[in-house]
Image (cartoon, rainbow, N blue to C red; front, top):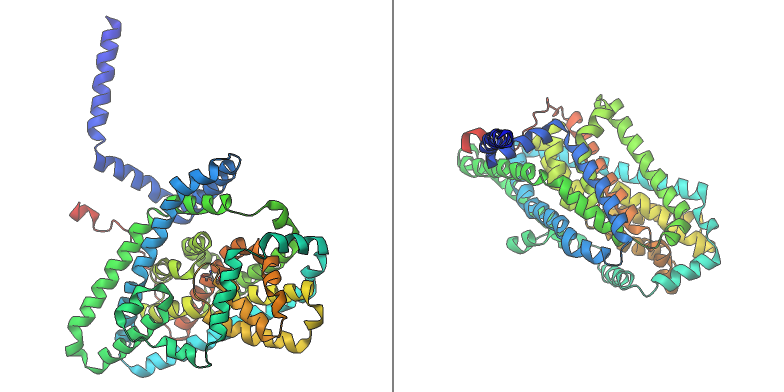
Length: 475
Ligand code: ASP
């Protein structure tokens, strides 16, 4: 009897709760819970759990396959979604940004400032890398035995060979080829490949300026169209970011199970340490810029930009991170769209401070091990120039920096028969370093957009938008 009463009251209680917990309610509870935790903490948790899960799975013989079959796809989908919206976002926001400027001279002014600051930060990064690698001399700690081991493990590696081939094609290009490549001949084709981002930027600038030249009345319908498209895409970024914690879990678990032997990683610890130290010093430099020039708190800057940094780290691609960088810089740092819509897409393709610092360290490290007679001052000067051009030419995708490193080495006359061994030397740690240098590349772009905005007085009070601002009205 007592049991029956107990059972019935429990059943009533349960069904009442169940009725309340409709799908919408459950979603709102999750959303509320997620809102309580800042996005960067959510992403960080996903990353740590991903690494732990990857380590755990590595201990099972079936672990790698399991992750590749059942976990990696979630990371891949996320990166695909970000890439999907990158091109329309650049088009919409840049066309709108330029047409909002009202005068072409303002655009010229902003463009020149941006390019100048980008060149300055890149030269600082390369010089910093060169100084550190010459001070710490990581190459001197590498024994002949390690060289042989790395050569045997990686010299025939298909990825290294394909990078060598890619560099060969780029080397054969004529001096003005990069300008020729910047000009699209088919708008649809340039929008269909993320590698052709500079062509999309060219198209957007061309359209934006023409839009200014047809006068306000005629420009209005197209401007409103791009305005609205821009809003829609930024909303898509918000929605995609809801899945970021799960995606980074998947991405990092995959990186861990496909990582190299830890013995080899340890042998390269000193070299990796120098790159990491350099990248860390770049963060300090950016913070100083933010503090002294922009007159804002660097902690605030790093906190607001953190989701973009964490994504750059997880995806190793500044291009894939671009939509999130734009959203953070505009809505959370308060940089005017007129500035961010130009500075960030251009920066993602041509400003790579992390990559250029890495190229300087890696080139000298390889010389220290394999070609010490090449370590003369004039060669180091050539590295500054070629690494600057190379970082401009690097695609904003995983591993692109290594292709350009080959071109840097080639420019200083590094013996071509040692090239494959040189790359084999640094290959094992390339992925983790790529993750870190991409983070710096993205942070550098965000810093420069603040600097340019400050110089043009275009920083406003940030107005972050949430994905569900209008949800109540439409649900
Ligand atoms: N992965 C880098 C980026 O997308 C480029 C590189 O250094 O390989 O910024």
